[in-house]
Image (cartoon, rainbow, N blue to C red; front, top):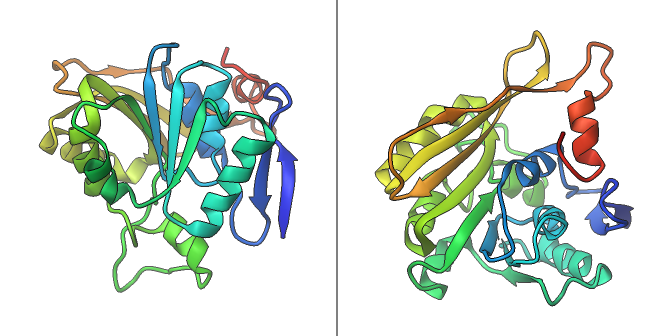
Length: 242
């Protein structure tokens, strides 16, 4: 069922979602908060889904933003999300495969790539959702982690950034593949669901042909012990980090 929801408390923005198979997640909110932007950038969002990251970023920058989404059904949600917020002049949504982006765009085209990719590798033991839309969003069916960095290597400008949210268990894979594609890891933020729990998410940024030098930022905790959101997360929900 298709519905229109408020985009948290972000300046009255709306977002189209489908309750059966696609809604934006906390991961997108955290990634949009993590990235550093200005008003003179060209930004592209891989695996844009129903466009939460372009919408969030539109509140932080006047720069042009492109979103790429492969699945036609989800692409339509993204288009409608941009239109209902009258952001057509800033945000462009393309129905295409990230693997084809390096064929469409010239070398050194973008200053920033954001990406909330499929998290899980495919294997014989994979528990893949019967809903194919959900399955492709969660598992590396159409886009592998190395594909993301291979494309970024071409279309990022020199010293351009790629920022990603991913599962903590994939951190070594991410760092290894970044360096294999001439992207130097620069910033990391580790996310914990609760103060005394193991980390389940990371936010990481790399720079194309960047100089060595790595920063681990302050950890983020999502929930208080009673399950409520921490003040930091609530501040992000209200349109900005603290």
